[in-house]
Every structure is written in C-alpha cells, then in structure tokens.
Length: 542
Image 1: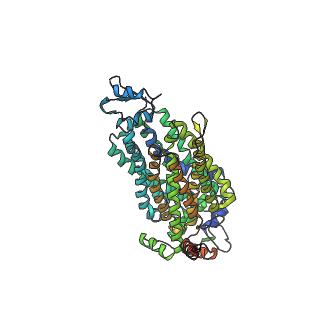
Image 2: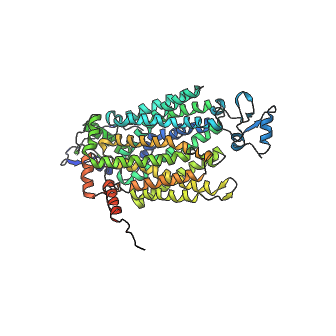
Image 3: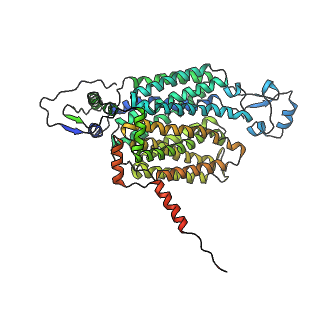
C-alpha cells in the first residue's frame, strides 16, 4: 500500500492558504481509516524483531543451572551435592565445580547454548552478560552517528541503512563460533538496530496528528512489545541456538520490506526546501486515509533550515531552552533504560523459568502500553511521566518484604512485574514526549542523543541483575527506587507538550517557553542552597 498518487488540480482555486504541516495533517486525519492503520503498523513491522534482537543472548546463551549432574568419577562433586535437594545455581557455584574437560559435572539440557559451548557459568557468567551489554555499545555508537544522519539524508533512508546493517549482523550470528566474534556481531547488530528503530519511530511521529499521537505511540510500541512472543516462541520451538539466530535474521529482512515502498517524511522534505515533494506526499497520505485534500491552493509555512552538523550543534548554544530540555530528557532516558533492561535481562534471577518469565514480561509490557493511553490522556505527557515513575517507586518498595504467595510466585515477582510495567510505560512515553518537545529541525539529533544516553543505561542495566548473586536482593530494588525518584525530579523541570503543536524550529520552541515561564533547574537549586544557608541552627545556652 504505497503513497503513489497524482495531484488533482482545482479549476478555479480560492485564495492561497498558509498552513503548517501540523495543520494539514490534522485536516487529513479527521478520523483514522483502516488503510492508515495498516500503513503505520507495517512501517513499524521492524519493531517485531527489534526486541528479539535485543534479548536473543538471553535465550541462545542461557545457563541451565537446574540441568546438570555430577560425573560418576567425581567424588568431590557427589559428596558436596548430597547436601542439596536438587541441581541449582547455589549447589553449582558455592562448591566451584569444574566443567572443563568433564572433571566434576556435565550439563543435561537438551537445548544448545553458547554459554554451555563456551563454558560460561558462575564466576564467568559476566561474559554472558557482556554479550547482552555489547549490543548497547553498538547502539550508542550508532545513535551518535545518527545524530546528523536523519536530519541530513532523511528519516527513511537512515532507518533503512540501519536495518540492513542489523540484518547482516543477525544472519552472521548463525555462524559465530567464538566469544570474541560474538561481541563484534553484537556491536554491529546494536549499531544497526538502534538507528533503524529510531528512524522509523521519527517517521511515524511526523505523520501523526497531535490529538491521536498518544494512541499511535502506544500502538507502535505494542508492535515492539509483541517481539517478546516472537523470541519466546522461536527459542522454544528451535533447540539449536545457531538456528534461532538464522530464523531471526530472516524475519528481520522480511520486516524491512514494507518500509521500502513508503515516501520520506514531508516535514523533512519541507525543512530541506522541497515543498513540492512534501505536498505530493501529503496528498498521497490523504488518499490513503480516504480523505483527499488537494494542496494546490495551500502554501506550507516553512523556514529553510538546511544545516550542517556543526550548525545544528551551535543552535543548542543559541537556544538555551532546547539545550536544557535535551539534557533533562537525556537523563530521564538513561534512568528509564537502566531500569527497563535491568529487569528484562534479570528475570532469570527473579524466576527460575525463563520462558514463563518473559511471557509474563511480554504481557506486562503490552498491558503497560495499553495503560499508558488513558494515563496520558488524563494526566498529560509531563504529569503522566511523573505518575508512572512515582508508581514504580511504590512497587519497588512493596517488593522488598519476603512473602511467598503461591508456587514460584512471591511478592517480589508480582511487585516487580507491576513496577516494570510502570517503567515500561514511562520509557514508552519518553519517546513521544521527547519527539514533541524537540523542534523538527533537530528532532533526529535530539532523539538520537536521548537514545544514545539510554544505550549507556541499557549497558549498565543487565549488570544490576548480577547484584542478586553477591548482595541482598533488596539492594537492586533500592537502586531502582532511587533511579525512578531522580528521573521523576528531572521531569518536573520539563515543559508539558500535551495539546500543543510540534515546534518546527528552535526559535519557535524558545518563544513558546518564554510565554510558559518554565522553571530553571539551576535557579531552583541555587534558591534551595540559599534558603539552607539562611536557616542556620542557633546555639542554645544551657
């Protein structure tokens, strides 16, 4: 369902109208047609493999701590194991049993795993986490490269370049036979995947009308969330870890096909001074939505903003509001990503069943995206973020007491599932929030910078789960609570984008901020310090 169309000419056009693209899109999408839903969902089809690409090491490199047995000739293993009821991580790691050359024990799992093949367990488990985390190093590098890519060559071309790179890396993972090569593959895979998904999200956001952006945002991210079911199902049905990579590589290639036929974002075309191309795309967009609007008598308001990368960077110095909001958003994204991936790479520490844990994580994440719609509609973007992050603090606190409920389910698992739902919703909302605050001329750069900071948090997140092995389980929960509180505080200093049009230029954002009178974090904390100095304790004579 492409956007190919021919403009219908008006015979006697009325007076020329001067409209922003936002106003034209609002006229086109008075109601959403099934065709438009198909366009957006098919464009976001890559999201269906984005989550599997992220979590594939969890399933292809799992460590089967409950599936091993002592070798008959190892009296050391047999004598120590007799004190434990069953095979477990505690029985294996507390006694430092040796797997190499079949000295003490052997794995009994029927499923292959690169962790088993390469001897990752107990003291070397961090190497398995490294495979997960190196994906985010690649993502960080890719998004830094993309800060000017989307605003230079376009949202669509940038996304396709990233997608092709991720497909090649995923297919290459099928043939990896060493730890070092796997790390390289994960870097390249993360490099491409992050560029592709950020570009696709930016493309969809710029086609979305303001009043429906909240619903579209949740719907697109539900495509991402559905990727959990893809990786759970494929890894459950395929027992060889190499073929799981092959399956995912093929699915990744297929997912890019719909996006090939769609045009570039009209907002990007307009800031590059290509009004004719922007109009053609918008007319085709109106045809797809079955509400054709000819644009022959409409002039699109535009300020030519063809800039170099250095000129874009200099704009942050000229636009202090854009700079401040970008820095605050960078921090919020960092925290949300660290919490999000800290849980999603750590479910194996909270529950013993890998597949059921991620299945419930999928249900929880899908529920969070659905829940985000009414929360954002009621509270707005800013207050919705504060509500969700505040709720996560409460759930992480509830998870601290030891309380068994039923079977494998205890209070921690239930509370953490609810907490990660809130974090997932907040992380999803941060995409929409950042996209609406950033001006069109710098949206690709701002989203890339925010997502780059999130990759740093994503890199740290998987290691938080390792704290369950070396410290009290409440320590990670305290860290999650503190992180949520700091992100909540940072959000308080951001503007609320609810019900407002997307700014096209930094100057438009500055003008709007001057009317809103936003609080300045630096001035706020200076005031706090001054008040603390004034309230010095007075000595009392006995």
